[in-house]
Image (cartoon, rainbow over all chains, first blue to last red):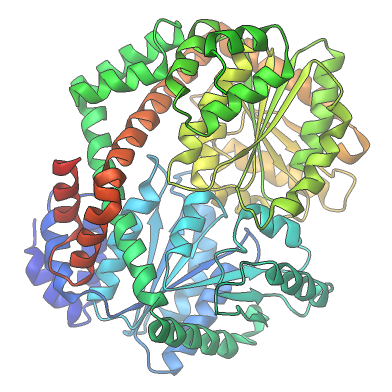
Length: 314
Length: 314
């Protein structure tokens, strides 16, 4: 039962939650209507402030997101939340525990929450996330929070391309060196040390500030380091302030326009690559690729020669 | 000063460390000689057992890797180590601390250690890691350990495609739910609870075993859950045994052949995609992409139409 994409977009803009959910499903599953949907969304995008939120597992991302949503709601913002989770039938049950906390907002018409699966083919995150953001943007959200699980390369890329990137840490969860390893120090516009009532919070803040002084000084924005106790809803007003301040600064200095252009470039490229990948995988149901893989394993050809052959047929 | 790739490969096979390092640099930097190098390596690959090692930041991956190398050396194995780190001039100093621990093996002719940078364009990990593995394989390593930092999608993919995947956890570093979130439970062939002398180790082992009973039962291999205290070099003999056992099982049942085929497929695809990406980015020095990005931002065209246009020119 296919709905008209244009009509769905209109209903989403009217604030109808089911229409928003339906649109995200259409883009997430790369439905045949995907192109129509994306085309219908295009004229209505560019309003929302995209805020990325990341940190190591266990720092309290879900709780922080939930309380930050409350804070933004209190400021009259329409809020979207995109929680990027690895898709796993196995871990599905376990994940529910977190999502349940979002239940506070389940009955709020001004909040749109969506968990997204991202496992599967390489580049899935780069490809699907911007499409879902477009839906929430077109639906009239003022702020869209993208919460990513893990600290891998694709996750860092997604958050780094947000208008404002919030990096969460927690005392004892891994010190500054670990954060540096994960590559998240470079991308943060706002740093938050959560669980700030725990031992070691002061040291984590100090370490973090020290490491941040080593950041490339050409950037005019000095990322603040804030403290929160999300489980007691403490300190999130400061985070909301800092996020708003960074956005205003970005708009004023042109940093926003530059980052959005990078985001659009990355999105276009990801779509283009996905199309090439689809063509490559589609060759005789993958037989061609299997045959090439076997010849590489036998040492008959090298993988570059195999890729050449594959591309020449795709 | 270009060396002949064939000669470099011959010298690497003779155990010359500088030749191995040089070859990895050539593949990592996608030098003009990359194709020649890959072709020269092709006939000499397929011997090494590829062992992936992953876990959240802070579980003790570097220490575990170092002690495991000692254990494998004691068993007479020639060992390669590929430590996949996010490249960051900013965090470079911090990373040294870890690498220094590997100093134990610095003077051992039977150990080849290499840190690899992976940040940069999407898919870098999928593209560069197999090339470096080929070098270490062709250089005559019996076992190559690939240690990945972080638990993101690309990292999980790389480790999941190893012949044997070792997943590290630690008590209190994030419980089973966090591991499930990161998607690493599904890919582990051997599980290791490190820092097993800490409080909560028993509970972590129990939780992990419970979660593993939920795994797809069609697989005949039951992943063992082992305990180690890598900082005191305890328990790594058991890990080496389990890794050898899994490899023997894989060889016997055909699981190894299937996984290697998947790995070759993924490698060929990554190379093919990288070539397409290079072509897309090369269009008039990226001007074409910038122009398309601006039109997408203005809502004039949607990103799919932009990708179509880009591909038609690439």
